[in-house]
Every structure is written in structure tokens, then in C-alpha cells.
Amino acid sequence: MVLIKNKLANIALSLPKILVPGEGIDMEKWAVIACDQYTSDLDYWEDVDKAVGSAPSSLRLVLPEVYLETPREKKISASIFREMKSYLRSGVLTELEPGFIYVRRTTNYGNVRNGLMACVDLEMYSFDKDSTSFIRPTEKTIIERVPPRVKIREKAVLELPHILFLIDDPAKTVIEPLEKTKNLYQKIYDFELMKNGGRIEGYHINEDSALSSIANAITDLADENAFHKANGDEKPMLLYAVGDGNHSLASAKQHWDNVKIGLKANELDGYPARFALVEIINIHDEGMKFEPIHRVLFDCPLDNLLVELESAFDLAIHEFNDVGTLEEFVKAEYDNRESHTFGLLSNDRLLAVSVNSPEHNLAVATLQIFLDDYIEKHDVEIDFIHDIGSVVDLVNKKNTGLLLPPIDKSGFFKTIIHEGTLPRKAFSMGHADEKRFYLEARKITR
Image 1: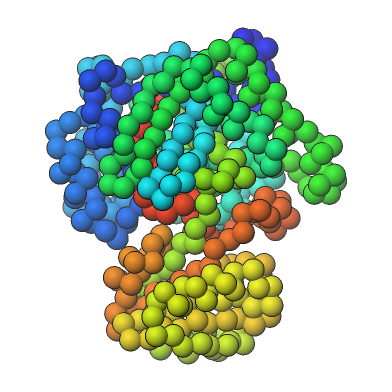
Image 2: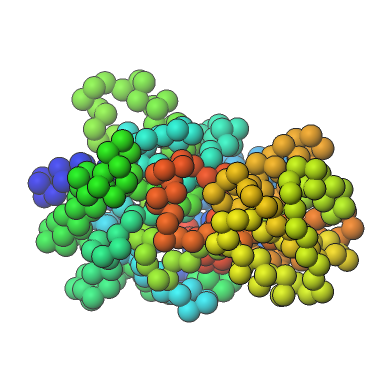
């Protein structure tokens, strides 16, 4: 086991003692979707609250972002810490032996996604814009969003992860083999997720042979000679790309940097706050889909936005009669290198806008860089929406929706390696209801 731990340490991993709900807990009520989903849909979270009722639930351990800057924020935040301690005292959560969990998620769209729950070493991660660390963000970190999350984490005794890591494993050597051998491991959960979340299974992996195989496979992915041959000698190794939960991981990193200042040298290696629990997914997993994240601008009429777009870019504009046809047009143009196309929606206009001869590699970069300047100049509020239906529901004479094209995941790692982080909310790993549900937990204090 010492050899395995050393191998894992070299690839920024450790074996967590994962907490899962104990016997008798209603798992469908326990697991809820990531707090940064449905941020403009209060009804969704009110429905979840009613469904959970007084049953033990991860809902009581997180702050859904729909409640940020509302009267309920302070009340929910205060109760989180009490509930964490209560759940530990009362045996709601049971601690497993050190090991990984193989996660098999079947979404409501029929996609089967394979993941591996593991702890990552925050010493090998940086969220700086020009980060060259082993673990790197894929999107720009909004620094202002980190301190409020750190404030919660520094008082918490538990973490519940919705962070998704990506590895570039085209030969499918790390996670996919576990599908064939899953029946050799202890199944620790298997149930239907609430509100169209699909089904999730979890298998505890703590046998030396399985752990060693995983460590060896990831070590092979970290081979510097192969990496430099593919990407150039001057490019530093990128082993893990943060696909989801970027700000949660940045908050964990900042918290650890704060904690370690007060520790002795011999306390650093195994301190719980040094690590963060994440789910690792292979970017080549067929069940893992990249979906665009759309935008809605509030109190921003479409015609006003269009005037400034025409001033900033050389545009081609196409008018449509229905959202479906507009969506198909935008999707069909996603890999066009000569122009970047996105949709504009109001209650009475549907447009496809193509920016000719764009400066950036991705359409989302072209648009979001413009929008960042626009919303600051006009004091416009923006929200990021995963599903087109929700965009359509929000647009009217004053609110404008923007439909983004998908991102090709096959060249994703090369884009990050060669061009750096993407603009905020550049892509989504699946639809909103395919996001990670809070299920497992881990102690982050001694």
C-alpha cells in the first residue's frame, strides 16, 4: 500500500476516506444537484426542498446559488455547519476505508458516463490565469467569487464535491476497465436520482491490485516524453483539466493556502484540507457530452445589443421564424474557422449573427469578451443558462437571449495547452440535469 500511495502522490492523487449515507437513508432525497444549477429557477429548488422535507439530505449541507443575495442566504449558511456536525454525530454518514469510488451514471438522455472519485493534491494546482500546473482550470476564475466560498469552507467540517476533472485518455486505460470488473467491488449505492437526474451506481475500490492498475495507467498518461512529443518541448505537462466546479476548487485551494501558514512542516503532507474530493472523467468517454452554455441579458433589448455588435464586428445576419431552425443553424456552424455564429432571441425576433474573420479560436471567446465590456458599460445583468427552453422562457422585449454553439471536445486539451484558459462559462459537461449530484462527502478538518 505504501508503494501505491507514493505512485498516487506523484500524480497528484491520494486515497480518500469517503463518507456515504448510512443504512436506511432515502438516497433519492439525499442526493441533490450541484448548487450552481438552475440559478434563475427558484421553483426548481423550492420543489427540491418540498421533496426532501425533514429527511436527511445533502440539500441541508450546501447553499443553492439561487438564494445568493436573498434574505434566506444567511439563514441557510448558518444552518449548514450545524447540520454537518449533526449528521456526523447521528451516524447519517458512514466512513469507508481509504479507496476510490467507481461511479456509473446513466443520464435521462440515455448517456452512460463513467467516473472515479479520488482526492487531488491542491499543492499541484493553481487557478492563476497563466497557470502551468499539473492541474489547471479550463475557464477564467472570477476572483471575486472565491472569498465568499472560502468563508464557508473555513467553517465547514465536510466537503461535498461537484467538481469534475477531465483526463485525456484516448486508449481508455484508466476508468473504462472498471466497468468490466465492477462486480468484483462492493456496490455502495444504486438508485434513481430526483428530478430527471437519471440513475447512479457506486462501487468502492480499495483492493491493492485495482488501485495499482489505476495508478499505473494515470502515470502512463503523465509521461513527459509522450506529452512533449505531442505538444512541443516548451509546453508544461497538463494532466488534469478542471471541467466543472472551477470556483469550488479555487476556494479549496485558497483555504488550504490560508491553513498551511499555521502548520508545522511535519503536518503538511497528510492534512485533510490539503486535498479536495473530485470525480475524474475521461474526455473520450462517449457518455460525456459537451454542451454550450447560453446567456440571457436582462433589461437589454435585442436592438440595442445588435447596434453595438455591428459597431464592434463585421457581421452577417440571418433571420429565422422558429427557435429549432435557429438552433440547428448555430450548431451547423460551430466548426467554421472563417466566422463565429451565435443566436440572438427576443420575444419577436430570432437572429443568427456571424462574426466574420474572428480574432479568437472559439465563438464563446469572441462573444464573451465583447459581453464583459458591454455589461460593464451598460450595467446590464447576465445569467448563464444550460437549456434553450429556459432561455426562451426568459426572453421578452427587454431581455435578450444568446444561443452559443457547442465546443468540439476532441481538440479540447490542445486548446487549453496552447491557448490557456477559456472565458467564463465557455461550455457545460452535459445538460443541467446531467450535472453532478451531491452524494459523497469527506472530512476536511482533524
